[in-house]
Length: 254
Image: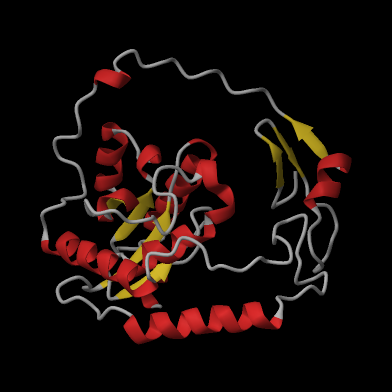
């Protein structure tokens, strides 16, 4: 396979073909240039998984000054947005790899646009102030997960460190997709702090901005995790990276 590939499924890849500088059509490549490998062996089940105790030295400490400030900011965000789960308008379609209502020329109705603008203006008027003691220094933020979302962030972190990058890294996870204690320890050795979205929630009746439990179950909302990770990270200056980015140059100079 030439440099670059299309992931067709868990056991098949394909060369993107000779598309030159034009867009790569992975759907066509997976039909014309498919290369099938051997399925990975099934991982052995861990009989003690349910009886495991929480990590004694987890990377995220809920009592430090950062988390106290982050939880206050989280609560203030709810109050500023009016604790609304939905924006109250119907989109004319969905935006994905297979459909895009913008490309199809569809638009929101004028009254829906006015409603969204009014809600944004209301939020801006009540937006929370930057909490003291929350943001410090420079660092890299990305969102991780389990299953197919797990390998990419490991590769991304290793590629950063191999370029000589010394910036601290935060990898954020939905609660049900946090790495095991052993993996957390290995990430800590790489200068990575593990953060959980659910740690921000207070014991008050609030509707979540995004599903904090599992990204895999709510893939259509997954883009929002990146924004939340940036806003609630501990860094004053943030370099946000997708978890499938492979770094070939040290980004410290940015």
